[in-house]
Length: 138
Image (cartoon, rainbow, N blue to C red; front, top):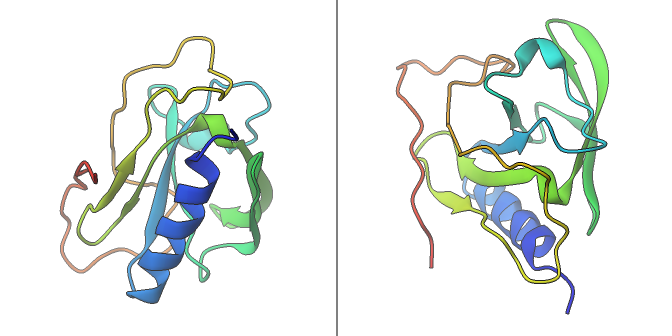
């Protein structure tokens, strides 16, 4: 069977957008072929806003997430292999999913523990600053 991670990412991203939430993904920046702005990587991870208002040309394929975005006003192409996506969650309420090992999916070499931090690349600042939290969805 093919890995379920890309299907879950697409479904959760669509669900969040339909409910007017901002989908964020947590990415392991150390995985091979990841192309993200290194200035925003913290502890080997980066949190990316993948809302339609924050990115252009978003493609979530079975192999990777690919889009164009601006970081500090500088346009950049972002490419994230699906195996590098550690979690997807809604900024506003923290609901989403953390991904573990999946049979049949390629594994990153040394996956660091998941650490959620505020996203320095977000264009919009929320009125109230609150820490994101993740909830396990079964």
